[in-house]
Structures are given as C-alpha cells and as structure tokens.
Length: 275
Image (cartoon, rainbow, N blue to C red; front, side, top):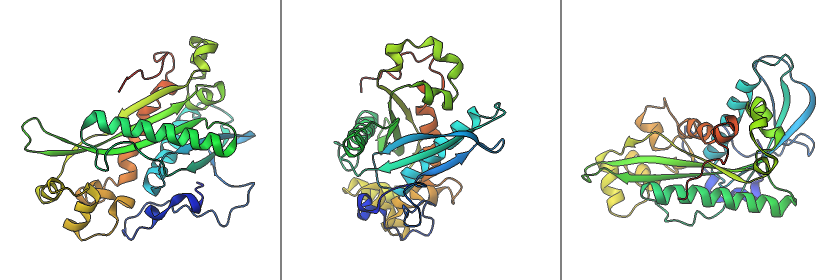
C-alpha cells in the first residue's frame, strides 16, 4: 500500500500498541513496484497487470488499511470462479482533506456529508496531482448519535465511494456479466456508493467527556489511558477486547459501499442519496 510520507501529516504517528498494520512506509519500494500487487487466492495471478488507481480522503493508516482490505476481499471473491485470476495492483494515494463538518460529527446527515466531502476532496486532489482521475475515491467519517431519549450515545461511521463504473472496474468487482445493463452514459457517469457501519454504545465515562466537548478519540484516550488511539484500534477495539479493531470495523461497510459496482444491474444510478 502506498502513501507518501509528506501527505500523511502528524496524524499517522501513533503510539497505540494495537496500531494498524499499514504504516505508510514505501521507502523500500521502487517507482515500478509502488502499490499493492494482489493475486487472487484461487491461484497464481496471470496476464497483463491491471492497475487500479485509488484515492483515500485521509492519512489515517487504519482508514487506508480498511479500504485496501475491502477491495482485496471484493476482487478476490469475484475472481474465485476464474481459471486465470487477474494480476491486480492497487495504487493507493491518501490525502489529508477537510471533511467540511464539525470535528465531532453528530447524526447520520452530518457524518455522511463528511464522508462524501472527503471522497470528493480525495478525487479532486488525485486528479490535480496525477492529471488523471482515480478509479475510486473513498471518504470515511466517524460520528456519534444520541438515542431517542438521549440516554445512550451511539458510535457509528459512514463510508462513501465515488467514481465511474468503467468496464475494467466492474469486471474486477464481479459485475462483468451485468455490464450490458448499463448504457454507455451510465458507465461513464460519476456515481456514489454509501454505507453505514454497525453502531455500538459509548460507555458512560467516555460519554460524559464528549458532553463536555471532547472528541471521541480524545475522550477514549483519557478514559483508557491511551495515546492517539484513533490511529490504532480505536474505541471499538478496546471495547471489543481487540476482536474488532478500527480497520475491521470500517471494512464491511466499505464493501457495502461498493454494491453499486458489484451489482450494477440493480443500481443503475448508483446510490442516489441526496444527503
């Protein structure tokens, strides 16, 4: 996975013992081998190398890791029935872009908007830097929401995916047999994919600090005596005893955000949410 150190900023420096596997270090990679070369699990990859250009609207290593994990799973699953699985390289670039919402988003509408703004920002930054668009741009935004009676603070996150449904993309993600359902105009149209994670209750000691104005990550660090945990396992990691870390928490929802590409036949216009 590739992320240029000068784009990561300070948010990648984590001291959480359960930090994500990805550290953004490509110092040992040559220009020709940058990115992730991924062969399907069903056999040795063959054929011409296919490069997917990926932009992520965050320098957070857990978020970048979750995007790559999601794409790996989708592409590997789509290639299981192929005698010659594709030779795919994911070229991932991350950009520290603004969410355009509060530092601690509250509710679905604000959190989803933050995710979409990050994806759109990553798309534009990638296009500016490389003079060509990415195949996918992803935005991930964590948020909080109160229960109806205001007694429980729930943690959740929204995932957004932005891009065109070109043949190379839908072939890799499993929708090649459905391409005939998309007109040329639809295939060339930029569309959204959106999905929300599962939610879980924030414990009262952390909730009390959030009420005082702290962001969730800072409140988590204070209650659980950690440092920069949002770059590592996150609140979900410590509450689940490490069974679900932050990257895994995001991965399932990112896969679901790709449904308009995986099943283009039933999402002719992508996800049409106006939020």
